[in-house]
Image 1 (cartoon, rainbow, N blue to C red):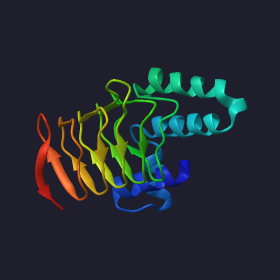
Image 2 (image 1 turned 90 degrees about the horizontal axis):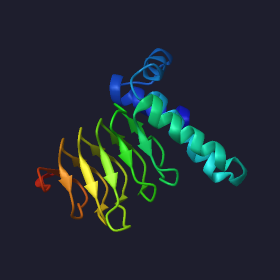
Image 3 (image 1 turned 90 degrees about the vertical axis):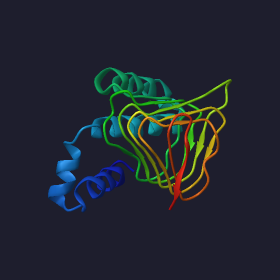
Image 4 (image 1 turned 60 degrees about the vertical axis):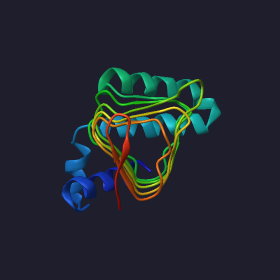
Amino acid sequence: MIINDIRAKARWLYGGDSTLLFLRACLSDATLSMVLYRLMAFCIRFKILFPLAYVFHKLNAIICGCVIGVNATFGNNFIILHSVGVVVNSAVKAGDDIVLESGVVIGAEKGKSPQIGSRVFFGAGAKVVGSVLIENDVVIGANAVVVKDVKNKTVVGGIPAKVLRQL
């Protein structure tokens, strides 16, 4: 999954995933954060490696400024463009092709966390809080605060987030 994530990041950033573009993506901002998240998730799946998961969790927080809960799950092609300030609650479940910009917070409210579909982009500083369902093919604008469900193929923005247009 790590290689697939980096290839997806190369396609997102540079429009392709050739060897050179793959290497550029490896050296780009937040790739280490993506790798540490995948290593943490791998350790969680194998119970005997559970303590090591917390090491990767802390390294991600200290080195990259990114806090992703140990039980958070993301599908294939998970991309973090800029890791500083990214915070994801441990109970978050997300599908494939998720892209996070810097400062994104996906958090719980009263013990309930967002559920996220596939092909979702989170703009810089976006916040999603509480028992919210984000469906597929959604764009969440920069600094938007999402507190209500977002339907398929929608662009939302503002505080609180409102539908800006349908895709």
